[in-house]
Image 1 (cartoon, rainbow, N blue to C red):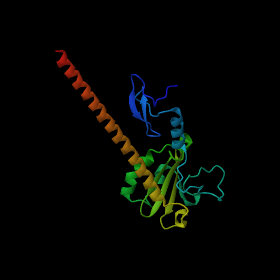
Image 2 (cartoon, helix red, strand yellow):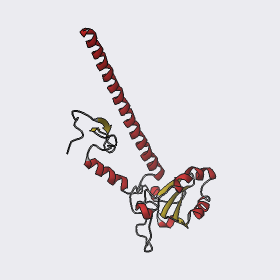
Image 3 (cartoon, rainbow, N blue to C red):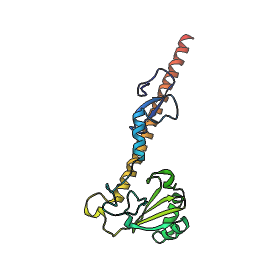
Length: 212
């Protein structure tokens, strides 16, 4: 198998690996990874649980058979289970109209867990000054709503883990910075390639004049 990190002789595209951010030389525009290993690593990270509390939120609690729990919210914070219309009525008790309008498209677009088998893909987290909420779509017509009031004691207050909001903000900031760096590096590479092309054209013109 060809090592994509070694420049081939012809017909290649310079790209950045979506996992390690390293340069590799692709033959197809849709290539995303510098190696099969990094493709596998990326898939595993994408599908693993993003549990910011770092432990099972229902540890030590008895859950009824068949319960599909949140990976982040304890079932003790569950305030609603039902259809979409009833969910929107219930959630309006905790969000302003403006807050709900901002998140409505994301909630309506949630795929059911019964299809994705991924809590991360089937849930939406919402934070305001009073509550941390989570909407978890279990089945096509079955939603769960968890509500954790800001003033309630939670694992963050005991110093076991960092504040959940801070963790989410840091994670999003890191992702934005990573993408910004990728874009800047690609722009720099494009500029360098343009300079090389310009230099090559100048050499060709000089040779033409000399030959003439």
